[in-house]
Image (tube, rainbow, N blue to C red; front, side, top):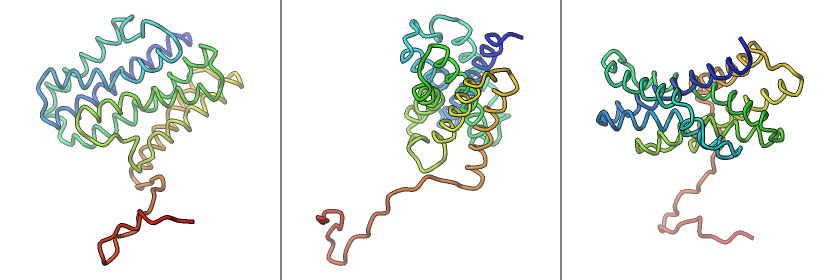
Length: 220
């Protein structure tokens, strides 16, 4: 199997798992058939479209290659019809989302590197590719985007992007090393969920007894 074929399969697999993630979230919100398909499509292809526009690859693969749109649509419709068998939708969404995050981190970073984007830019593009679909899914289902919460999400994608760049620079771009990078992102995301790891947040001082807001104080 050539690297390009492996990359295509990884990309389509990422499309499928993110489409399932988006469709599962839409089913949980009780959207209709079109709503489920649309949210699945956005979750699956939003990050890839953003990536292709940034690296000036137009039209984006989501529109240029029918296999991407077909994979997203078929997966989303399958989730709609089979959702009674998906008893624990929340757990399913989280696991599928972690898998999509991992796969899109790897493929997005590699495509940026192949487009001769410098290492730092490739890391950022890989991260944006991975979180773009989930961001669109959460906005469409009226959820606070995961990337804006305390959870380790974008940081997991960024760590995977850095590893992919290091592997690329050292010439280790075979299936095994890239799979290891995807496993890193997937494992880090699931462990963070399991152990409730989170990034720090600002601590707000409580209101005073007189009702005044301490945030309005001027600090010198």
